Structures are given as structure tokens and as C-alpha cells.
Length: 493
Image 1: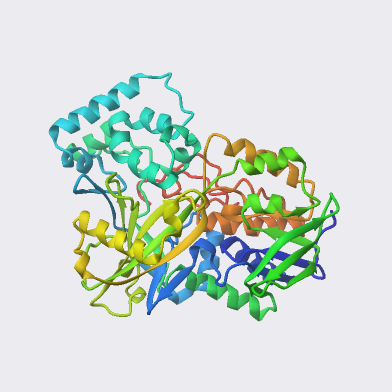
Image 2: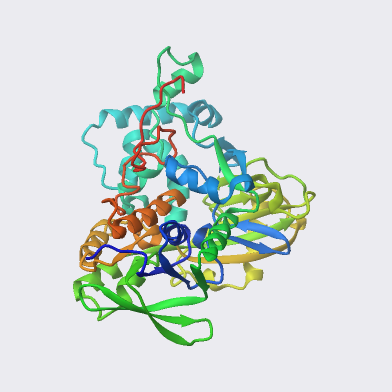
């Protein structure tokens, strides 16, 4: 493959964090590009929607990173429009609130002395079982925390999110997303204080956030690249990628009116779902690649935004709901992310989040009124506010929000990735593009790396971002290559 230069035409599929960051990188390199987005708004799942002046974050998007490069870009693009927030989040379980991330003293004592003893005994038993398997999420958590704590604080919420037993979720999910606490050590520190010289790795306690929601960041990206004549074409869906078996030659685009056009290009970056990318190749891939593609699964995401006639309901930015008696999995309080997310400071807007599969769950397509009624009823059942306080609401649906980490996904992704390598002018980037639960900064780095690889400047592994088996939110020194390698902190830092 020849090295890309300023005369080449780049085609970027998807205007989420990965695609827009790739466009931003190409702008800096003086390259020509076109960006096509199937939706009518930029940002992907990191968008900001609005209703009657109330602004909604689809999922809750904090801006924190271990990458100096990403942090510098955020500062360049948003600057003074970023505010600093102190993280406040809790778990709601059995009618009580528990700190999250879990604090052993709070968790054990909050559950009562009998339950605390059961948790500690279960934990000790797990520590003695050296040969316990670690194939699934359930295995991984139970081995490190004990079965009792797994059943109380991990099982219900996780199964709400993924819609399947924890025994069927790959252990890689746990390794990437859960802080590995030593219960006995943490409890001893809570009761008697930390020993001198202990190194404690803490979780992110502060984060940045655009004052008008995460979509504000990506709208600024869109405006900046447009000034360099890199246009973002909204409601333009790539329905086919044409190839000659060694490279992509063009894409077929359908606009919002149903009209189609063929657009030729030299280099192609795709952040569309990996499943879509494979199935839209023409000629179509071999049967084994299609079969691997069919094994990839997703969870769809639905937010019911309720406008409530109360100035304050709770202080958290979000709450994880571990109650199996209600369907809601998480509740966002948007004014606690930024006061500017609500037009009236005397009102509150909560986002109740539900995790479904659009093709399987009949509720997905239920009328908005049904969802608003359900969400209002569940808020009252949780004791957070009365149904009478809800004065309005709306519903937002986000298909394919979460790539599923089941027992088949790793092999399927590997098979597809190997096949796609034959196309020297194509790279798949971002969360859905790599079928990986990327944070925003991870997705941005995949876009940067893909561009730089094709420009021939350096050799980066765009598929290697976010593969470390370490918790994403541990503070760490930033490495020069931006690979997000976690490191232990010096206590003085």
C-alpha cells in the first residue's frame, strides 16, 4: 500500500468520537476527507439530545483520560466550555444507598453485622480456592470478592445491563471494568488507618464535562473540521463498500430521501458496527466470515427522561439500581452533571436507563407514554419521588449501544479482523467499529492511530487500544505512546 498524502480522498464512516477525531487529525495533516453519518446528529452514543430546553446525556459521559494527547485535544477544542465535576455515584440496593466505587466499611456495615460476617467468610473461602476457574464474569468476581458480595453488588445490575447470566459473560469484561479491592486490607484501613508506606490506587474522583453536555464537544469538532472543508454529511448512510478483494474502491451512500450515490475514495475509516461493515462489503465475504459476524451481539439502550417539579432529589450524578424488582438499571441526574443541562433551576430532569434488545424485547417499541408511565412508577417504587411530581417526559432509543462480551465474541472479532487486514486502505475504529467497550478517549485514539498508520508516519496498533486487563479509572502516569498502560502512583503524587 502506498503512503497516503494530501491529494488522497479519505472517506470516514460515522461521526462519533472516533470518526470526528480521525477527521480532526486529517485536518491537521492537510488531507481531504468526507465524513458520512447515518443519524441526524453527531457524537454517536456521546451525543446530547434535548427536549423543551432540557438536555440529555445518553448514558453519562465523563471526560477523563490517561492520554496526554487526548487531553490536549479536548482542551484545544472545548477549552473554557469544560467544567470540573466531583464524582458522586451510589448503588441503590434493598432500600438503601451504598457508595460506589464500593467502600468496604460502608458496604459491610451498611448491610448489617450478620451479612457482613457472611460476606467476609465467603471472601475468605474464595481466597482459599486457588484453582477456581476464571472463564466468566461470575468466576472472575467470585474469585476476588467472594460469592456473597458477587450476589449482592454485581449480579443483579450486570444481568440487567447484558440480559444474560453472569456465567455467560466473558471474564475480560470484569478485568477491564471492575476495581480489584482487597476486602480485608481495605476494611483494616477503614477501621485502623492505612499503614505507613501503603500505595493506594484510587478511582477517578473528579472529571471534566462540557457545560452543555458531551454533544457540545463533538459539535465543536464538527465545526472545526468544516472550516478546513471536511464536511460532515448527516443522514447519509453507507449502505455498501465496494472492493476488488485487496482494497476498498468506493462506497454507496443513501441520503435521508432515499437517493443513492457512489463516492470513490483512496482511504476508508469505518466506525459503523463491525457487523454492518462485514455485511455491507461487495462482493460479500466468505461464509465463515459472515458466520463470525452473525455471532456478534449488542445491547440496545433506552432512556426515559422525566421532568420533575422538584429542585433537588438526590446529590449523585448517577445511581446504579441493583433492585431486581424494577427494570430500570441506572438513573442519571442531569443538573448534577452541569446546571446548564436544565433551563429552570427549580426543576429536575432524571434519565432512567433501560437495557434491551430491540429485536427481542417487545417493550422496545412500546409507545413513549407507556415508558413514561413505567419510569414514573418505578421512581416512586424506589422512594425517590412521587409519580405526581412528574410533569413531562420523553424517550430516546439508542440501538447497538453496547457490544456484548459473551463467550463467542473474542474469537469472532479475531476472525473478522484477520479477514479485514486484506484491505490495506481500510481500518475499523471506535467502540462499535472494533466491537469493544471503548471509552471516548480509547475511541479517539483508534481514530488517530488509524490515520497515522495510513499516512505512514509510525506503526500504531489501533486494535490494541483498551486491551489491558486493568480497571479503566485507576489514576496512572501517562505513557509517552498513549497506550493507556496503568501504573502505580507514588503516594506523594
